[in-house]
Image (tube, rainbow, N blue to C red; front, side, top):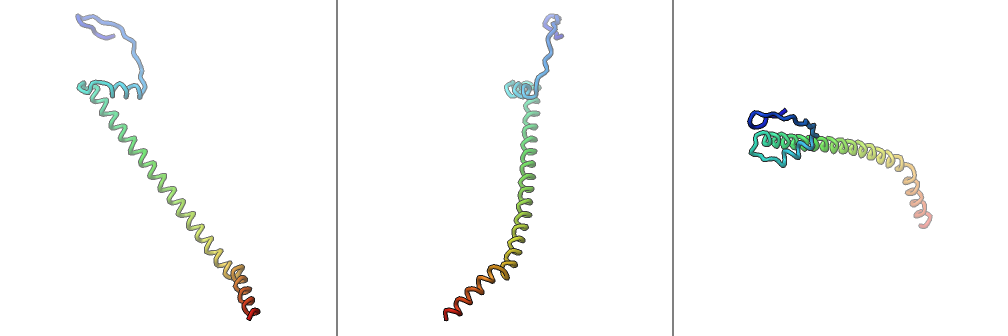
Length: 107
């Protein structure tokens, strides 16, 4: 029920609006009206809060990927170092020995 001029009353339907509908109404409303101004301020604060939350989530994800990449690089570096140590006495050493033998037989 709403009051009309001259003391009359009228029954009106109540609507339940979605958050987005409220946002659109607030953004398109007259900011000189206190309730509209308050709604615009509310949605501006919420939008900024969401931006900061999204940025924080992106930063956390970036740092996790950076940490994972660093750990994988350390593991790869260690594996490469072990392969060099094995190869020094293995295939590489045999190739050097063969090269030396070939030079000796040519001389």
